[in-house]
Image 1 (cartoon, rainbow, N blue to C red):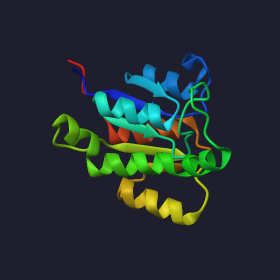
Image 2 (image 1 turned 180 degrees about the vertical axis):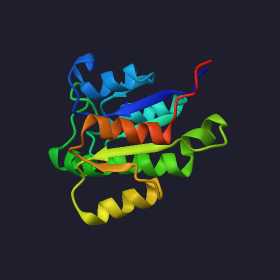
Image 3 (image 1 turned 90 degrees about the vertical axis):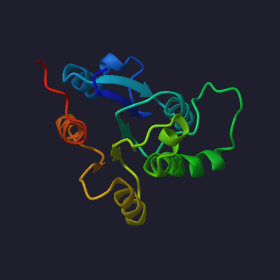
Length: 157
């Protein structure tokens, strides 16, 4: 299996992924892209599927709007600022890989409009020394460049 499987965690995408320039560009570059739009959906995918890279927005709704249980609006605001950060922490701790017996952590490219310098310091410390923590708005090609640095496609024979 080629090592090109990306989990694209972004709540602000068009209903049809083909309408998203970022999704199309990643697919055309040769990546196998799975989209999720909420924190819980990302958590579930990471628990049960292996990915070679996570493209992560930090400000995520905890759940999809059509989930059965409503959440208080105050709680949604707090969770929205912290859900993606918690997922990033779990990825960097190797939580999902350890649960599946995989000995490595998955690289992460963060693209987010997170407010506040303190949150960005935390994000950068979790992501590491690489410049894979990008502030929105970013050009789609800048995101693709970060993905290519973090997850180069294998050479074709």
